[in-house]
Length: 307
Image (tube, rainbow, N blue to C red):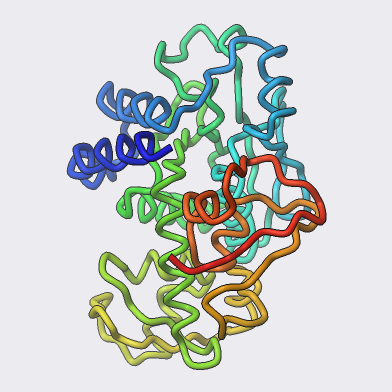
């Protein structure tokens, strides 16, 4: 596991510059290669056929995505992704629904290699379960919101997004280790606010990134805090206009007074959800709880410590 984490960190330190400069929605052989290398650095299995998909689901390495009042699935044959990509999709669909008043539509998730279309890239990460295809919204405001949000997330280097033309859709590859680290850091910043009423700016934060985390629009953040631009400083305390929404999104624990606590696994819990809730990381949960894997049992008790 240590070697895997070190490999992933080294990969993103090498690719950081190219990812940060890729905010054009135009794909390239380089972006495909970056996604492919990331999938291997994370140790993902590329599903060959439906049989291998079933095996990955039963082991907990892939989780199911269900349609709900915020998310629609259109002709999705294999509604599965890796756990971190599901966290990303759950949060994005909730924020899209609040901003646009309609469901976010997914047109493809995992595709085993024997079900890849003829025009797919040889190094596509769809078989690895870290890619999500999104329908291009027809409403102008929704179209604009989704593109701006995806580009802001790409700027924060947690996804790689390309607008494909045949058929029209956004191809989103989620860099889950970086995404988890980003959310955990932002969650700790929210916990640092007075009674959950604010957000403390951390190194690398952007106003658009904070907007995506909290569900509060950039314009609202600027208005509430009297900001004349999007410039923010490390350590700056930002007020949030809708604290109930923030607490619901992040899923903060009831008590953070102790440095050590426990969590009893509930139905639907994943290591990703629990790590984000307590402001820690999946790797730290695994270290704290010994030989724990992604497949959790209802009622299982996990030790939680900050680190």
